[in-house]
Image 1 (tube, rainbow, N blue to C red):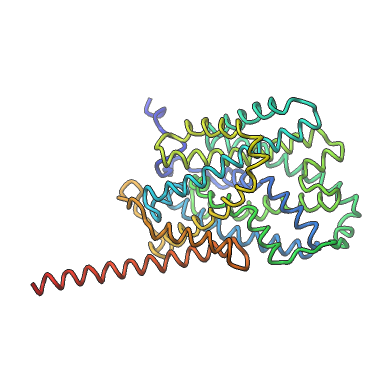
Image 2: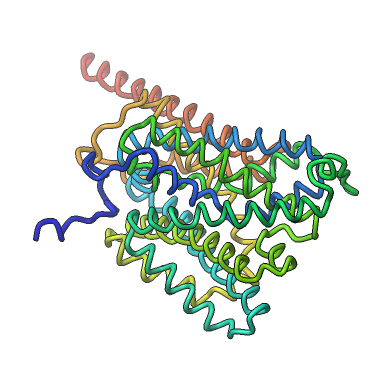
Length: 424
């Protein structure tokens, strides 16, 4: 009876050591996390605008940045057992964390709806099945697996990861053969080149927002080493594969989504399988993370919130698909500074150690963090250079400087008051 009362998603508490997973389970979950359809679209853009050598270096550099960012968050999560949303309470305060959770959750619900439509629209074109029926069935299936939490995500990833690698790899190799193999790819020269700074921005920007939610999954890792290793490996394998599939497909056929390439190759069933599994893993992670965010605000268990979020995303799928992607991109610029502030708060201001979550009396709102976050968003949008890095570095530096200044001012004010009392 007691076991049934346990929230196995640990929506509002740290994950205990007894419910942590080992290396291989965490690796497939994180690979499923990085198998992201939007990364293929970004890979297609890079493939058409770069030579093969430039493409390889950009993907390696981009994944190094992403791996460092998400790996650092993974370390914090494994050590504390806390999700992104609960970690924000330390820096932003309890109600201040609601701002971060709301932004993260809305973005993920939005991507869930877009993902459902991204599956339904091409499948309808090929099969003739009703789009609304495809949206309802796929949306509900994705919601159901997310409802069952990490266990279902692990099982789904064990199925999806090898299927996507095998079928996607076969299709990409066929597309590469049409170009003349490796030699053909080596000789490809873009008609319109992309600048290297712009290319790196595309590579990093494609997943850095989603990467902010890394703690939602790596908090289940048994050790810090497992959390960091599986996260970094997943980005160098999973994310790189998505970029490679997208690039080869775009150069060979003009289509950057491997499933679209498969449709053109006549591989209808494999295309539907790969498209479905790829979006399913992405959407399950998205709606799972959104549930944790809304749970942080409402204090309702994640499993109940997931159902509501999934239904909302499914109902709004076509509207989101047609109208919301631009807004999601804008929202995406707002998420990386949240992760940067968590990192700065943990490692610099708290020297790599937080008090146990259940023993902390959190501030209501930490305005310093909110100001630094707002400045980070502005820096990402308006400062020249690489926007994601501008937002990350700028928000972290400003948060530390402001926090230390406030601390110094508070100490000085306290000392002055004490001296006045003594003199009286």
